Image (tube, rainbow, N blue to C red; front, side, top):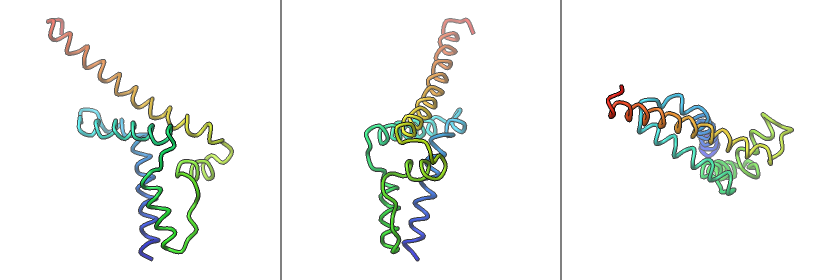
Length: 129
């Protein structure tokens, strides 16, 4: 029972992390530490998807499933849950670039915020504000 709960907790944490990666920029305006954490999450998400690195939450979930006597899914979380349950006919070759595109879009939001802040400060410094 304990390992089954741990597997569910890892699943919930995984879903929370994905939601954070997708929507985190909505909650980070004027919160530089939260923005830095979100940017780090985005870069981490890109890294593990592009380089096919294992996610520690996937490993924890699969380990807990084995310990609970369940048969863990094979592969990574994104492909298993999104690819089989939410978007069953979308190939892996499309899912990963789509996930990376979401991360890059969010990084673009931060780049735009940074550009606007820089222009605002430059205008104030030159006395044009």
